[in-house]
Length: 566
Ligand code: SF4
Ligand code: SF4
Image (tube, rainbow, N blue to C red; front, side, top):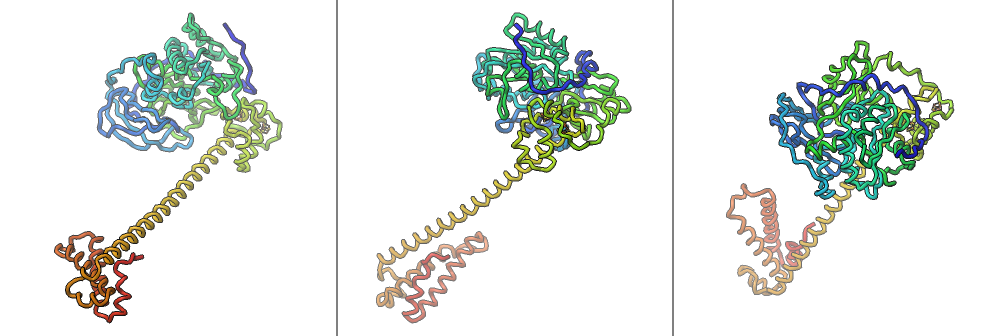
């Protein structure tokens, strides 16, 4: 049954450029001389290293342990030797480094012993989610959000949508995957559906991929899954946009599909779930489209960690290629360097030339034509966001829902003034994040300082209380003992004067303390003990001096030895 389809706001129809790479079957990319496997596959999915340099690893062996709630495990993409654990540059506009495990393949592709298929019917939901985390499964549509977290969020989910729209121009990795592995994708999708308890499974594929639609429909025949061809309109593959088209549900600002009973997973993710549950295999490779200005465009199954420069050799870029884009031309970015590894989120690398991607005309002033607002699929006001970003009025930009912008590029695409609007929005977001990070760091430093002060005050008070208690105890004992306990040498004066008796008792205690410590070689004692000895000695000398003075002065000094010192 074909349900009614709905429209989302805005959208554009750029040239698809799918035919360049979609016509050739997926090929397996050869292993490079070294694999650079990042322990952090995205901003969210982190892992800590559990291998050492020189260690032999097998294909599929875990090399990174999930870190925290959002962490996912990382595995060796092939068998070989760990040759380095180091920070390496990443495929990111910033080119920032991240910790990586460098593996030199031995060429034998020896697998770890495969885990038995994971039967999610007999396992608890928590065990199944833990299995996804341990297999390193993240969303392969580009966002690389950890799948165990996304699944864990869902409750009361009625509909699972499988996203095969692949709306971004030039990219065809999902198209080829659906054409060639439709049954496996559906098997994975059904596992996901059962895990979130969804009643309904809908597969959405843009209608410019008729072969993929046919393959998925054939695989779904006789099942409850519905495969729906949706009109090709960029960005129909956006999660909220596809949910809108297939179900009519409009997800408002700040909400997720899960809040409205709908969850959405990419077809590549469903395929990875199938490999994890049915074959016990972790996520160690993915399909990457190599296309653009090159001799042999196509799709390749690539080991995670393969350096982009090694991979590009398979596409044979033409000599007039002037840069490389990771991702599509709408949402991707120009790579600052090529010695970066393929990660789980790498879906496409485009060789760009001035002929295919002419330089943008110079930016002109905004004429307030509102074309950008008409094209925005999220119904934002891009020209307003542009003004706020330009003037660094980030508070206002947030008020105008900057963080709902999916950076689809529709506004930039239609802007007659050629304003690179998305670049402004990315700048604003990164500035806001940087300020929040700074604020968090400052708050944490302040908290640490306040706690330290509190701790020092508390220790001081405890020490003073202890000394006071000790002094009171001593005074009480002396009062109880009376003059009879005073040392023999001072017997006579003590009997005459109780204050002298106090001095004599304090002297006796100081002597006793000294006698306890004296037999030792004080040079070997700790500085603290030596200080204590010196202190006792000093007090003894004072007491002796006081004892030798006439009675009135001695009485004043008598209280001193047992008083708490400041
Ligand atoms: S499309 Fe460009 S010129 Fe028109 S309002 Fe938007 S930003 Fe301004
Ligand atoms: S980039 Fe952002 S503001 Fe521009 S059209 Fe897309 S969602 Fe709207």
